[in-house]
Length: 215
Image (cartoon, rainbow, N blue to C red; front, side, top):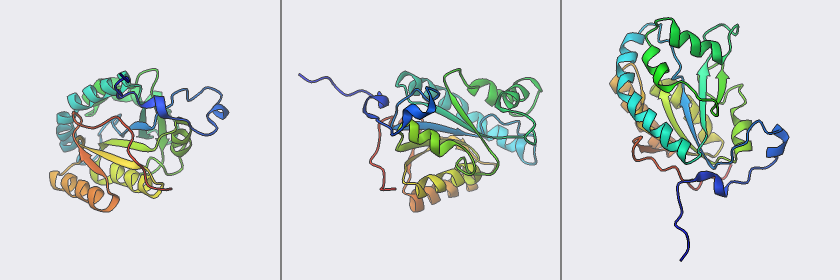
């Protein structure tokens, strides 16, 4: 009797040219989990309300992250650089963990591990002027699971760019948040209707590859 297929996403991936990264992207997975701006001080207008709304997604994302790591699905942090390009991602993590900011609890729960990836983005989309597309190509990814902050801004912009590049999309309804609940719902509806994204909870999201559109 054949072995039952697991959620192990890396067993079917065969990215082109992975060797050219000289071992810096050792994972092979057709699915990637992309968390957007979760390392975030939230020290901006509306940040207090956003921090409150984000609390409900913390435990759900922590559980999903653990499940993804067991399945060897890579986790990519896509983050704004709040240091005016004078800091790096490590500095941003340290700031959110140690400076008593509104986003401290979220950053503490979701701080990256040594095997995770990150990209720093200058604008809303995680694809714009970053290495994300190259990284995904070398991982062999064709399906993206998106979550983070905010649903109606950076998550949507990233989903738009992913759609244009032919990725299959899964958006976490309870693993993303916006300052206003109505904006959160509207963004989810847009991504489902216009980008053909699958809307799914953190507990129910599949870690298996979907059939992506032709790029």
